[in-house]
Image 1 (cartoon, rainbow, N blue to C red):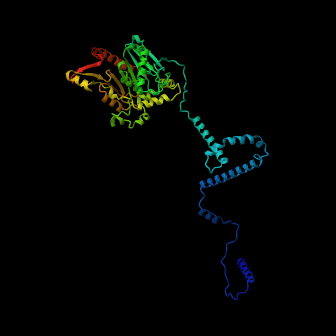
Image 2 (image 1 turned 90 degrees about the vertical axis):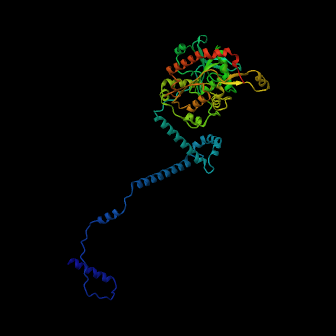
Image 3 (image 1 turned 45 degrees about the horizontal axis):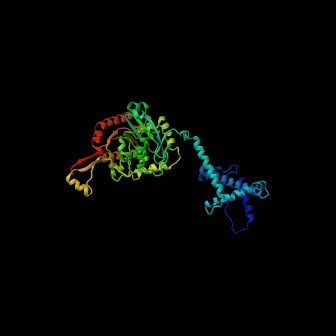
Length: 484
């Protein structure tokens, strides 16, 4: 009743506040009972509204936080800059008075560096950024180098005291050489070995034992090519001059008889030149993984592209299994390091460029010129008239001595097509294909391999002394008579 009475009083008060609209209510207005007023908060409505709003992602919150943080740092930096400009960089400050003059001079001298900046860049803003990036890059490199413990330390290149014997050539140059084995007057045969690229006289036959040389009676002579090691450079050297350097060396060290020439890898180009230009002094040739001119005009397409594709990709190939085992050893590493040190001791890159050019330029001869052939002189009117009544004069051309070649079947540096070409143009050459051997494994630090080479040469020397030399002595100047 109290609630209804309270409502009537409220209606009366409302009616007294407005004008009488002229409407007479005949029925009593009844309002439904309202729940009592309490101090309870509208938690249900708040919770329902909260559920309808999607929760803000943590990523967005972090993004906004970083954005605000950066803005604060930027404003702080601007504030610091303004403080410095108003206090430190003014004309009256102590720092500007002391350092202003020297800094201005340095800036004027380094002003030319601003020419390398884009035209739309202010040098005052650009150079601090460049220096900051430079310092950051150096810090990153130092950090990476400090944690890279797997990389082995780089050995220093040392210049050792001169140790070679030297001779003076007819043109005044000096040629450095090294002799091993038995004395020349007691030697069964002498062996002269030009070294390969990035090598020196110290290579010779790597790891050959003096006892083995003495057992077979070998006199081994190795020498530095012009500009390598301790040999004087040659201003205009070619393969012809290289062959005569070898000839003068043999005469200087007392090799009066014919000698054998040993060519390994790229050093074989000088051995081929000796067979062509000074063949009268060469008893025979021993070649281990020999190289030829890759631009020989008579090379077939299959021989040129065998195994390794194009020529410029030869030196980017991997090593065979035995070569990997050999080159990973400490013995090979120490030998190779010392040999390279001796090779580059003069600090001049020109001899190495010349050696590389010799390999791929015109040699002045072809390997086919070394093939033994009978050449008869019938050109011209007088030889032709003479041939009508008598036999034509003929002679054997090419290299008459034996050629022995050892080639590893797992050699990844010298393509098999080179050996196929040699066997095609020089059918008289003896080729020994070595299964599972690589470019280094047969020649470096292999006692059995060295014994095999010396045994082969000694046996060939015996055959040569009993057959071919007898024929040469019986027919002066290697001339034969044959029917036209």
